[in-house]
Length: 382
Image 1 (tube, rainbow, N blue to C red):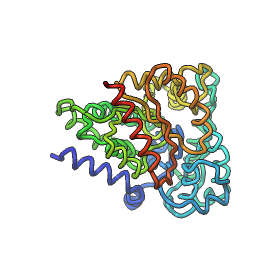
Image 2: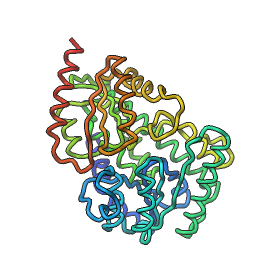
Image 3: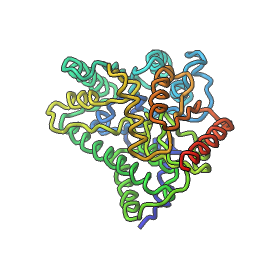
Image 4: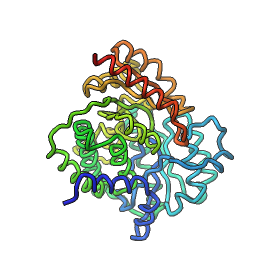
């Protein structure tokens, strides 16, 4: 039987070697489709018998993408385009691109006229009035159009039966991830902050049934352990993405346990399963999107709902505070910061804002902020 450390080593390898994973699937005769942020219905790709392959930027240079973007666009989008242009994503049969923030809208057009010639783009323009019946019908049409474009570009067929099977696979994977997140919080000595990130990140580069099978093994071993004591800090993380290896090393060295997260790359899309009782698969996808809440990317007329949710996440998980990783030049996240700051101040829970960029290599400021945060936590515990 594999040990916890052996399984964590596998997840880390998978998370850090996406190109090798892609080449493995291509060598096996499978087609793969790039899934760009955010909320692309990748179940459609899985139902077509292809590999949904996550594209969330990453470390590396940004050179050719600068020909299409000014420098004040956030690095996640720049790196995604750079990867499509520099050959990193070669082998993909298509890409699913959404437009849920002000950077992704021009990104979709820049992708179309550049990388889109090599890797065709399937464009999704989600409707933000997603809860009303007319909104669900609109989004169901958007998903249907995406399915039809995928079928045409990749010469595949997506049946309702296979979509429903895909929904079951994805619901199970979300459930195992939620289970792992709670187990990781209860076992901070066995699961470091970096381990937690790699376990979740690896799923972007694997078929979800394969990831679920591996994750079940890890969860079973963790469940067999007693809860572990922790003398470090317990935090909730928030932001778009926190997968920079240098940052993760610092979190580990400063004994930071991530007890829960509000990170787009990690838990935000895991909260809501697809309702398997809905007969029309496209309406089922639209219904799932309609029930996605507490995300700064998604329209909600109740302005208090989002900050209250993040504060409650910290309280419910007995966190010492929140680390907010603010992606540089991300207007959506920056605009919501004042409301988050006000909510955490009212709750008397420390909130530390950390400027973040996927290309960061100097973490001196982060170290200083974590030292300050640790001092605040220790004072609060006295």
